[in-house]
Amino acid sequence: MIAALVLAVMAWSGATSSIVVAHDGRIEAFDRTGQKKLWSSAGVANASSIVVSGDEQSAAVLDGFGDRVAIVSLADGAVEMHEMPGTPIGAAFLGHDLWVIVRDHSSVLHIAGRKQIPVALDPAFIVAVDAYLYVYSRADGVLQEIDPQKLEVRRMIGVGTAGSDLEVRGPNAYICRPSDEEIVVVDLPHMTKKVVKAGKAPIDLAFVPFGAKLELDPGTAIIADPARQQLIEARDPGSGKTINVPSPCDRVIINGAGVFAQDSNSGALYRIDGRRATKCSWESKGLVCAEH
Image (cartoon, rainbow, N blue to C red):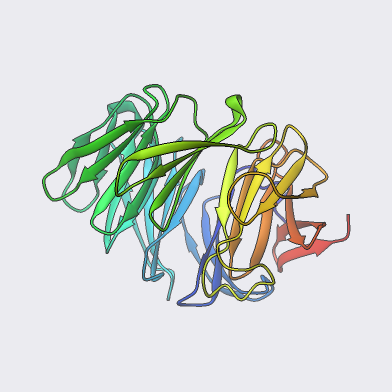
């Protein structure tokens, strides 16, 4: 039994209709209920984050402690292990190519070609959109648009320091800045920005994806606000309906399996159903949720 989820990360593959969980040196796939294990493979020792490719056939699991990245086939669990030249802190698939932030080098590394692109100080988050990569760096407080073909920064905009999350939906990028109680919204085609107030400490943001078949409408935003021990449900990121959670959750995960909130400090994981939060844990038999 896994006692805590501090070093566990989860993602969803619509292509295989499976939940992918990385923990304790293993990468495992379960059906959408979390009850049936589909496969289990050796992974990284300390899973710090996970990202799924656009075609949802592959996933990359990062080990920020061991400086390794595991790329896994979601169909059968086949794993490729890659040693990193520094700390991998974020990753994104652009097509079938994986790009990884190497924080120590202030760069983005193309795994297959081992090519690095210099970026601003303290890069933390990366998203792939169309033909470009977008990287947010916390210390310099900038969002940079990268051309991976030319291996260079194409455009950039100042969005403020100490951001805690970067998400992109449609033409906009969203940077959470909990210290200033705001979310910075960047119009990517024009590289202009506006600021939206959201709760007391908006630390993480997720959108309901198209095709998820949840009760929430696609595009609905859920914001984690640990300062108020709440989630904020909004049509546009900002103010909206609040959902109380039993602990100060700082991560939101939304996929075809449902809406989940996680408290990284304690490892507590909750499934969100309407305004109800049910505590869950990963055990040998799969995902177990019980009324809190």
